[in-house]
Length: 201
Image 1: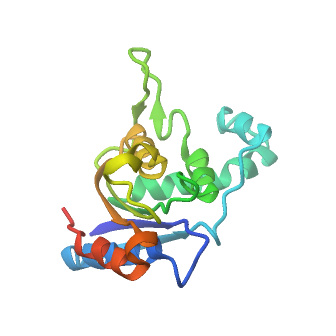
Image 2: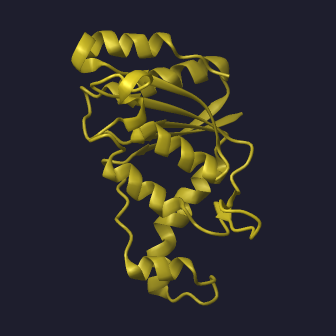
């Protein structure tokens, strides 16, 4: 059985291209892996707070050292990491807002970036080693402009950061699917192009 973690981050709901594209990715995964279970994270409903000093300090305490308030501070992070550890396939919808990801997705990433749980420092290089092995991810994004190529490519901080972060914690990004150029060719056509590009490995 394939365990799928599906993360939505667009503030939009019914009219969100990244949500629609993400759902199409999920459909294709289900068609390839009929035996599956899906865990849904809608970050507009399951919200992660911006990090506080107390939460950060709680992360670095061992379970034996934590007080009851420390345990409350790490509970949501522990649960989110457990869902990631349990997943085989991750689908992340990362629409572009002001050239980067939504603040809700950034807050989620900050919550799951935990030394000793999702990555570890090795002392042998600049980047830490990711601990979430044998997992693959698909990224769905949407944008008004075309950022996969051309002069705007260098300004795509949404998918480049999402890919970097996932790979940093050990997750292999196998594909990025785009509903792009919505301000140029229209939302419907851009979404259709994105859907037609979906291939599941």
